Image 1 (cartoon, rainbow, N blue to C red):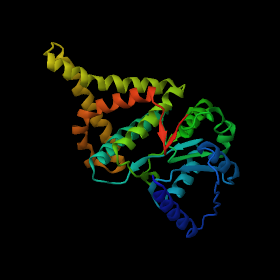
Image 2: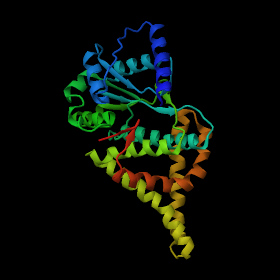
Image 3: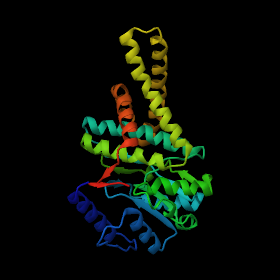
Image 4: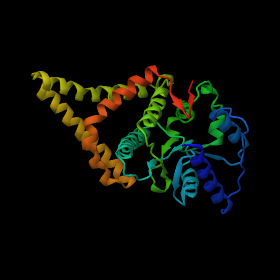
Length: 298
């Protein structure tokens, strides 16, 4: 987001707080110390037992979002609650691409969390107990890494008790954010996300990354086989078709939950280009230093 958009979002959030019965405190930083340091200071000053993190570019939350979070913790007592992210509806091709990709990410995140092997979450819509945060010493184990305050904190929680990390499959918990509107912004954002993997000791991340790259290489292999009229072309076609069916079922489950059933048909054109996108992002994340808001991430 640019400075004007962030300021507008801030003013809307401030007005919402002022019109509510919520007791709040705004902490304004004169100098930038880093996201993790700022979060650590805010959490230290927080008086509540549940910490909820969000991002400046979140544009919609259900009116019962906070109440639903509080009720979930009261009922199930998790250490961390991973909550769903959706994008604000837009009509551009790039926005539709991100909407479709998010359906797959939502299904994978919820699925692995359901079998007590979470490996993804998003600080734009995340909640955890202050007690559990204190038990793992907050962000101390990964303070030297600029980004990833959400994923690395989740990994510390998982070492303590993987069963205490839940995924909130409740529509009132969905937060909507804006899709990026340029290919350059999308590239930088995805490289930043993917670059966290090399600092993560969770083998599931490496395995998932390998599977994604290998599965998308099938399209490249099929393309080469067609050009050379190879005898393995029919077998590669079967694997590609099987991948398409699996992706369709995965997206159907997520689209039903997020209320985006019509979005699933975008899978057909995107399946043809996603293999190239996945390879470019995967390889770039190994060699490029990600950039966020004009700053290099260490």
